[in-house]
Image 1 (cartoon, rainbow, N blue to C red):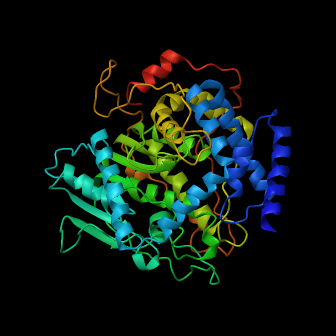
Image 2 (spheres, rainbow, N blue to C red):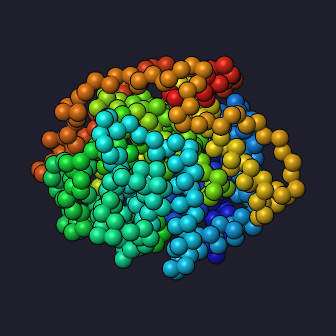
Image 3 (cartoon, rainbow, N blue to C red):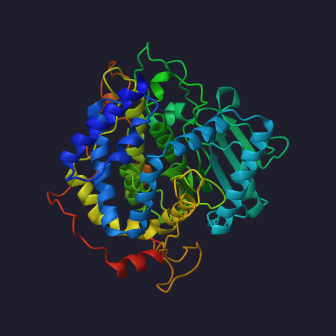
Length: 479
């Protein structure tokens, strides 16, 4: 009975969205959302689909590379063979034995070496004799191993979900077997002091009331390189209420933990998904205000998926923009953990059309310039996939721009330092505000004041053309 209900929901959503989005095809958005692990209210599905369709429409109108990728995605989403292909991949990932765990590690070691060769691990040690690195969601340890290949004398601190809680097994040596690698086995999303700074009232009936911990690992250390490679695992033994919001909680937790421990001028590497998604674009834009950013997608694995890495260099953690981002990530963690009437997590506020238009007007050309390689790699993989109908026989001419290599000066010279690098670490906003700390009653929402005022202008993007000279310039240098 489940399949007909799902199909009916998709049809109703598609019909409503077509009325709202000038006839744009929304099948892929609906399909993508309707496979969510936990039921989402229909109104929320409509909201999410609406702004993602708006973004996809802009990108298809302005970039032939994304347009081709979107066509292949549509074909894949409508193919039953694709469902079978990725279902088998998920089953294999969720049921690894020792041999497949080693194979999993070997794959990511190749990805780690590719990342190293790309220049993602190059750091500014600010005169220190040894490189220090922080690896969040470290297990099985492939990226740490690749980083140690680059810096054999480096020290690495890591946090990873215990294997007993559904995390990956550690494959690399650590602790007494390799003193360079220190690992804390815990759930990073439960380190409440990292995100709240002051005690709050947690309802006694909250499913995780007894599971939050007040320790702050590595609180007195700073790191030249921070790697955030975590994603919500289906094997994670967690309370059911967390399933809906866990990806957002985990990303926010990693970002806050990493940014509060990164060295001035350090390097931040972050695993992300779908460069054309609203939340991802906002993160890329905010990161570009306090770091010099590029995007990296490995060819050794996960080529058919939308995953990629944000490589942020010369991070300025004390800048006004960085502090605002940290506050926003803390708020995201709080809302996805204690938001809502039952204080078990609330959905993020969806943007209106004007907000989407403004983001695309300001950042759309930069996004297109940066994302050429990651979209082209995914296109090439989908074209040659065995499960996509007719893909293997296609001969497609795909516009590809030159590969962006880190550390290679462009014709424009060395990148400029991000704006507003004033040192204001001591002025970081305490979260939550004093009005919402220990005295807060169950169900109380922490008040949040907008950190960025928006102008009344509502720029339109439809019909806007990408400035090719500007796009090429952006593609050839660090932002």
